[in-house]
Image (cartoon, rainbow, N blue to C red; front, side):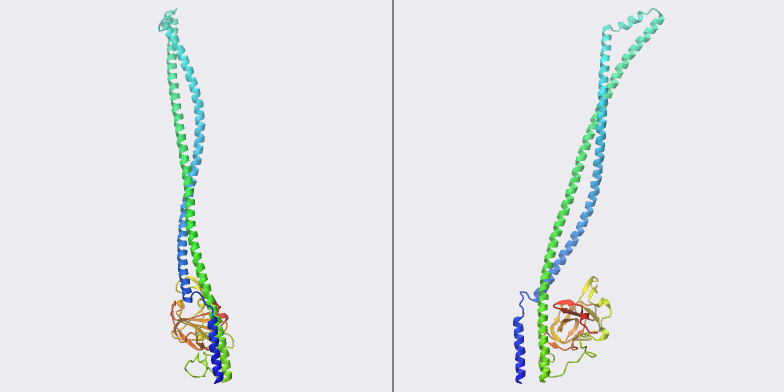
Length: 424
């Protein structure tokens, strides 16, 4: 009786010391989980906005492509203006030379006409009559009459030629004036086209800069939320690792106490697995002999996973239809099918656990077993269980598409492939 009292006191002291030495965190697990969820939601919102802005950027790029086509057209037009301007300048030079020749011809014709008019003024019409009456014969008269007629015709031709030359000069001057106006118009059009081209380029740069600025801000916010998420996740992992270490320590103490109790004939005096029953019998084992190494599957063999889609790793999510990572194995079974402990351990969690629904977590040698989507829970947190002991029933609670058991295995708070720890 004295040994039993000393042993009980030792367990109490060990529990007290372990509680005192447990790390104290600034935030609770619930607060950290909430922070993770909020950060994840905010990050998703920012990423959605980033996607929208990227779509906007694609739209801007399309507009920019259209603008580039317009710039190309304007550039081609400007190049054609340069050719036309060069051609007009060449024509202007030729027409100026032609005008100079015409003006010289006009000056010569004006001089000849002035001389002719001066002679006519001096002699008057009598000159023509005296020429005719001085004829010595009829034949001579006819000849002189033809000469007078030719002279008169020449006078008329000179006047007509002068009038034509004046008209040509006037026409050429008008053409040159029109060409100059056209040249000025083309120059103005060229300047407008170049200004438009520059405006398009500036608008393009502005749109790209504004959109990139917004994208950078959104990405910075998303990164900040990711940092918050990662920090909370690291804190939760640290808490989980500490809890797992504490559970492993308690598990080792429990095993030692069981060995010590068996050697002293005390049986299950700790009372954690069959509390209040007073029985010294071992819990009922799982169907079939328990393996000497590794953990047993927590459900009867006919329900073991047989489809790779239900296993650990990447898969298409049965609810969202999105390719995602799966943290463990799913085993379909009727509702209420017995779920038992894969190994000796201590229950570290027995309650609702988000997407896992009703969930039991058991610290066993080497890590922690997670059993999810249960219809019922038959154990409580802090309880010690034996391998094969009934801990709950198969269900479809949480995020589930049908009755099945989800099995995960965690080491230091991180999910690992349970297959490496299970005994087939």
